[in-house]
Picture 1 (spheres, rainbow, N blue to C red):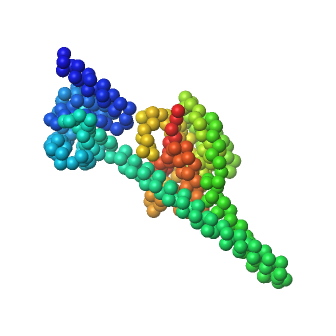
Picture 2 (cartoon, rainbow, N blue to C red):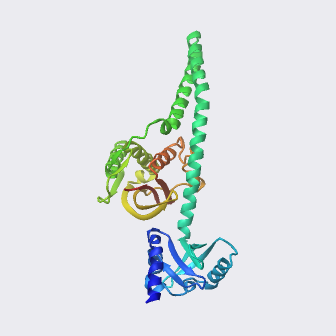
Picture 3 (cartoon, rainbow, N blue to C red):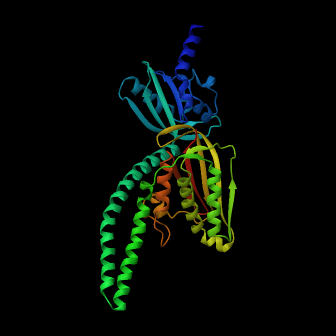
Length: 359
């Protein structure tokens, strides 16, 4: 009975690990499992009761690697260790994971955290996007202000010159200067727009956002484009800036519609708006119990490999004549909602996924 009480007490200390989407095992210095969280149960297809008390090394393709890591941690050779390994699931399927070992609260306890390698790659990519978005914001703001003042001077000088000259040919030259200055001014204003406009918060129904975007896209591309709706109507309203989310979704959908030129000519162009609720997810280095997943999927040629890693950078465009600002602004608006945009693209299917925390 005493052993049972100790086990129960140990389990109660680790219950918070069930809230994490990563796989967690707490082991002793012998490698015996003291606790396994729900994420590990689901991944291995084995019950917690079966795992607890067993040798955790048996769950790995190469048990000796874990044994060596535990010995090193027990002898204080390191405080934290990370390495890659293969978990062995109940059906003998191997799952590649990144393993992290750290000391627990009590002496002799080790916390082993495992995350699928693809998830780790995604988290690393998100961190890069966050850092890059911040750098982009500062670069854009500084660059736009540096351009704005001399641009006004150039336009003003061209107007004054136009008033003085009499030759029609020379007037045409000054008009070109004024026109190009106005075009650059519009570009600068678009660069500064997300940082100027106040964040107007209200109740947002994501399906109303999708319907608004759908009507705008179909008005511009009324023929040979089909927009499919695959909605989870149970998704609750959330607090956000409706106009920003419309603009973010519109920028993505508009890019998709333009990329579908060949499909539209063939008569089978399709965009799908798909909404789902994601549970127990981590993005932007935060854990969320619930999050909105909004997918904008098209059956176009896919994002060119040459710009796949840079599509959210300003002034990067895969289309001739594009400004390269649509996705940058979309990412900025979504990040202002503590969310993130991810892109998964292969020829024939491009999926932009917007993730936003739900209450």
